[in-house]
Length: 263
Image (tube, rainbow, N blue to C red; front, side):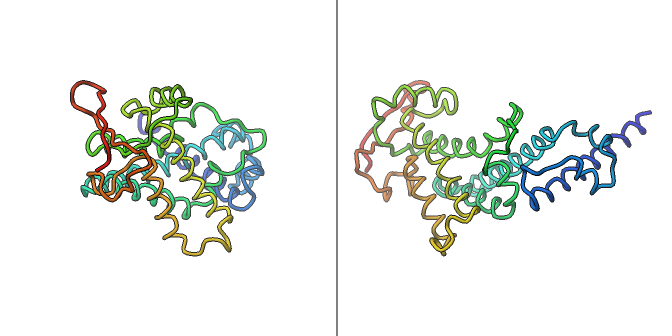
């Protein structure tokens, strides 16, 4: 009986993968708004009723594709971070490695990228199941900054008084290991990273930016500066001034922070 059950499970996995692969072809050809279960079934030689046993609705198939895309780019970012960390790269180098890996993934998977970062699909509302996968790249960026904060410290501008409450909420919910001063620039950098990639994927850089690899590297290096990452681990060469202070964990107690001028 277990052999039969195993064979059935393998068959289900194979059919599910085939459905997703055909749906991805439709995404590339027609876009997510025109994804059709009937068309997928027709191309696979399946009855629509049989396909519905795997995905009862278009929205469930879309959700599966969205989760797969988020997981794929998330795994790419995590792998880049692990490799850079294992190589004892600086925190700035880790940031650049992760952001470049995300861009490379997007360039290699433009239709999947468009599905998760392009225009909303009419009539579709993403369920809770997409939140975790959608957070993976952001969590890697947070980890890079948190590691830097624990070791070299972060060169950050003072927090505006009217943003302090929101920044406190952000770190509580998203990055409890970071000081409030890091929250707003980190969220801004996260969104600007995908803005850079989207401009490239969707053609806004056409006839504007030609040396895109170089441009991207310089742009994400500047984003690293805004989130407080130091170029050489001791504040040197980081463009000090402008009221920035070096924030570090002081070691005098959990969550304690010390600050001082950037040297």
